[in-house]
Length: 376
Image 1 (cartoon, one colour):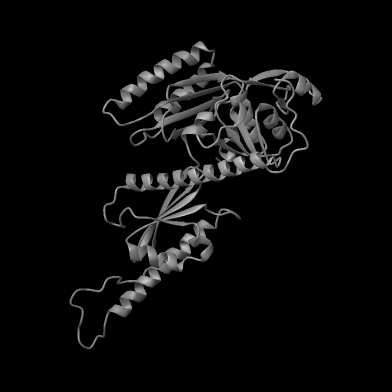
Image 2 (spheres, rainbow, N blue to C red):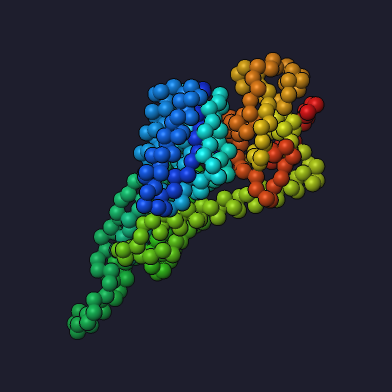
C-alpha cells in the first residue's frame, strides 16, 4: 500500500484516537445500528480523556460519511486538531477497535483496505463519452461530444441519388471517438509526470475497441475495459463501482504475491535485501533502507524511541548504542508503520503467504550496514 495516503499523519499533533468498526449497510436498521455503535465508541473515547472537540469531529466523521453499499468497515483516525483519516474499508474488523495513543494505529487499514489510485472512468459510445476523474478522492464529471453526426445509419436510408450514408456515419463515429481519445489523453497526463494511474472504459465492445485503438500506447497500457453495460443503457453505477473495486483488489493481490516471493527469496539467499524480526527491521528503518514494511501480528510488542521519534530500537540498550537517549516506549504496531511512512516505504499486511519473525519483516532498497538486534 502506498504510504502517501498516510503522510498527513506525520504532521498531525498527538494524541491520536483511532477507531475501527462495522459500517455495513445491508439491513433495514443499519442507521440505527450505527447510532448505537457510535454511542458506545463515544463513551469509550470520553472515558479515555479525548478532548470534547475531537470527539465531536469524530462523531461528524462517523455519522456523516456517504453510506457504503452492502458489507463494509470504517476507519477514523483523529489527531489533537481533528479527523485526519475517514474512509470505508473493504470489510469490517472482527470487533470494534478504539485506541487512544501518542501515535495513530493504521494496521487495520493495511489489512482491510486497498490502494485507491487516481483514475479516469470513461463511459463511451460512438457519439461521445461521459468522463469522471477520481483524483485525490475528488470526483469531477464531464461529457465529451465530438460533434460528428449522424453516428447510426438510418433504417431505409438507401435513397437513390444521395449515395450510401454509411461512409458519413462511419466518419462521424471516428470523429467522436478521436475527440474522446484526445480528451482522455489530456486528462490522464494533466497531473504531472506520472499522470493518471488507470483508465477504466465502459461501453459496448466496438465502442471500447475503437477508443482503445485511438489512444497512444502509453495510455493503452494503463487502460482496463469493464464489461458492465453500455452508455445510455441504464446501467447501475453501483455495478461499475464494484467492478473498479474488484480490479483494485486484484492489483493488490498481485502486489502481495510479488512482495511475498521477493521477501521469501531474499531471506532464503541471505542477501541482506530482506529483514525480519523487531531488531533487524528497526535497524533497517533507522538507516532508511526499507522499501516495503510487512506487518503481521505484533501482539503487544513494544519498541523504544528517542524524544523526537527519529530513532527506534527493540530495547533501551540498542537505542543507547545508537547514541540516542531512550525517552518513549511505544507499541510496535503503531511506531513501525509510522516510521515506514516517514522514510517513504510502502506498507503491506502479512497474510498466509508471509510469516516474518516477531510478526514484522521488510523488503529493503539496499543491504544496510548492520542489523543491530541487541538482546531481546
